[in-house]
Length: 307
Ligand code: HEM
Image (cartoon, rainbow, N blue to C red):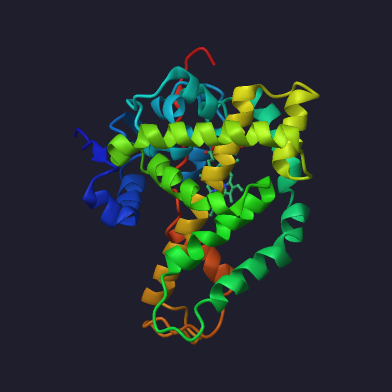
């Protein structure tokens, strides 16, 4: 029997992805699909096979249509985006779009900033930002969780980590929304990418003049003094951290709150109407991340028989 080619951008899949996943796992190890970008792909449906595929050197992150255009948007970014080669290069040379040994080198350069200890040390500051934002909800009947909490929290953290000015965050939001929407952003996409690259280049020039002790200054040092990073890799790294570092978390908070309000964990004291009294446990959060993950698939890999 010929299997139907599934449309990952279609409403049937989007409305209930878990029913689709269960069906695909039951009916075979791979499934043909059309990605939202329009590209055709095979989906590996089962855990053990996916683990093997993700570590198979014959499957490459290079040369995927999305990787060549606007990689942090992953599969949702169209390959056909009209964009100059220099803009493309300035945002495409990052970890989601390269294989070892380049991937290993790039990963090593930032991994020191993302050790469990460094992240744990950020906890008090992140809690303070979260508390300040929630204080803004006090005494109000209505608040917008996405605009007033889910978006500003991660963008503020990533801006502080990189040492970027807070006042630029609304621009990031506009550009990043377009990048993540990919082809669905239509004519907004190319100007958003161009503005983002112009911004990143200006930021790098400014930070070269007056370095600080932030991650961005550290990466510039690695580029300029040690030559372990090209200029395109440097701008692509900033691009990836900005987009991947906040968009996922905005969606995580939004999806998590939605699921909590629809089905509060028993004994949590949360009413389905939204009056939540006790914080959900870590395990209940973990369950929700798996149930509605911000991205539900890895960026596509391309088969290369030469690998
Ligand atoms: C709930 C939040 C997040 C989720 C669900 C998520 C998910 C993912 C996924 C699926 C990948 C692709 C892995 C692959 O290659 O197949 C990825 C890669 C990556 N993410 Fe996230 N992410 C999240 C938060 C973040 C944050 C906060 C940052 C930065 C501050 C970040 C930075 C990165 C980077 C740099 C990569 C590339 C890593 C590599 O290729 O080695 N992510 N993430």
